[in-house]
Length: 310
Image 1 (cartoon, rainbow, N blue to C red):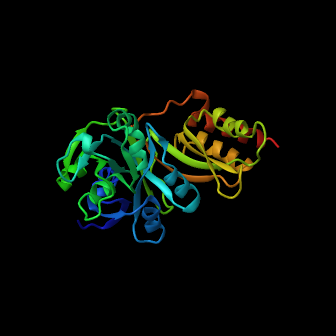
Image 2 (image 1 turned 180 degrees about the vertical axis):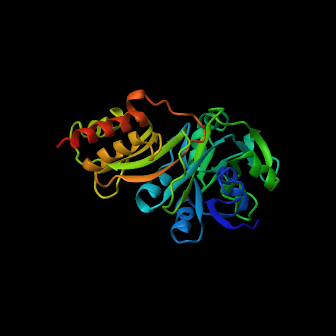
Image 3 (image 1 turned 90 degrees about the vertical axis):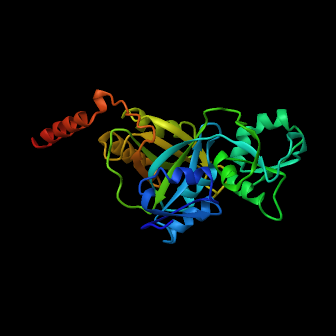
């Protein structure tokens, strides 16, 4: 495939991440470049070998993908410009036809294993789990001279692409699960506001004391900014040092969001803005009248009218 853009993604071919890539802006003219890991995909953007990277960031069952959260928040200086949701379903596949009772080891990604763990305990209680870099990597290994395991847990598409034998299908513990993927680029222009947007930030806890987190959250609460995801992650610098990764409803161009982040910056100057972008579910946010753009404009004009008297 040729194109004017290069998008790296968690490979190899046939991963859920590649399926997510096809839904991203510019995908129709992008060359797909598989990477061996999330870090490798993001490093390609950092080093100029790709214009964007598509990586998983959150799963409806397992929560945040820590490798992505840590890499985007700490290791790299990048920006999220788009997101998409991909429904997740799994099959158990082997290179040659075999029965469930013959499977002694299974290879897949840790997040996939977490989503089929109950099924595996009930159906394959003695099976050995072999971690793989991705679901597709475990499947691809079945076609090599040294497969990682007897079978792989992967997407139906990659099993079909590789001509694998499907031993069992629909094995996920939570039917209807989805994974959220993001398109990450070098920092640049923020996508236009749509009215159904999301903003991602990371905020180091400025001081480890009672009430410190509440004081940060109050900046959002008093301005009507809803936090739709919050997770704590270690900074890696010292035991007890954490930052908070958050998704906010709204766009940096909205006065209420900008004002909240300005307040956060005063108490936690190391706050990082990771991007404002359209929500994948297109769910429009509800803005209370007192924190609307009109309310902020009216308040600004009122203060200006007072200062003109002095």
